[in-house]
Length: 70
Image (cartoon, rainbow, N blue to C red; front, side, top):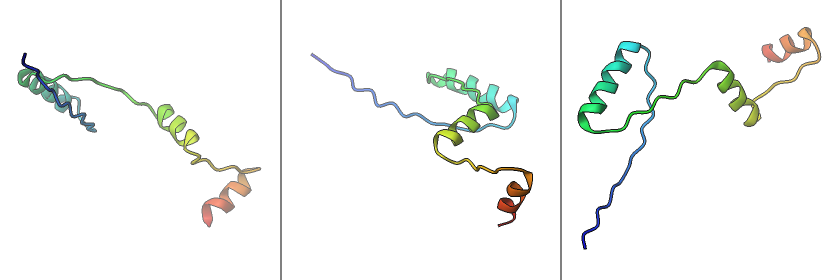
């Protein structure tokens, strides 16, 4: 009996141009790789910041400005 071991690497990339993304998608298809897209918005980043505790609290605008100037 023969067994086949497949080692999968997951790579994340940030692409600034849609044309680059299309090129990478075509390249992945030709190489036999799987290609998945995940679109993240600013809201996704904000939720991640909130979950990680990267939030600031201020009682008013003057308090916020004072915190920013520190």
